[in-house]
Image 1 (cartoon, helix red, strand yellow):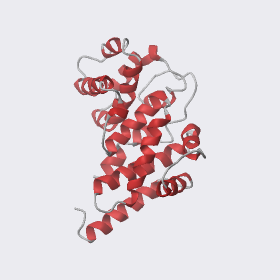
Image 2 (cartoon, rainbow, N blue to C red):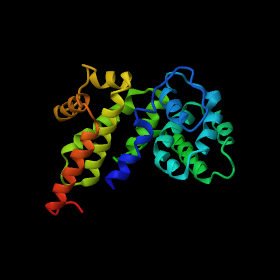
Image 3 (cartoon, one colour):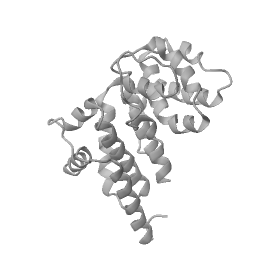
Length: 230
């Protein structure tokens, strides 16, 4: 389960892919990450139909992994551009049922107020926060991820612990290459609880963010040995 949840974030946090360049032109599936990561800095609504066509070229397993980041990304695009949404949806190839389902979910989410309208905590919702952030640059989505760090020391509910794991690992990973995210986290005006501040300091100083995945696996092993998590 842990591996699956962490894999779901790799679409938006893989450092080798995210050398964000100005004036990005979509040419192949590798450009999907670059386009999403650079969109808030260089919005290109005219290129969204081409981007949808590029998403279509992803392998089925890639679409599965990318589902929630893409939902978050498009929900905010649809929310900001309601008149363009119908045209964009027409760009979905008729034979790509999975992509149509993903983008229709994003459309429905936009109609209910977007990603921030959703209650609760989940690793998949964390993915949507990332997609939404890259679409808008809105720091509220990073702050929502930061809020999940309070569950890093959760030892009763494994699902809540995993929410914190995916939030901490992804924040650490993206902050290494994204100055905007790092500045949001380092803002001296933040009013996070002491425990959350400690987690922020931990993730910002991590040399290798994979240490948090390793720590999580060890914590899960320990909890299972105690008979608490199954």
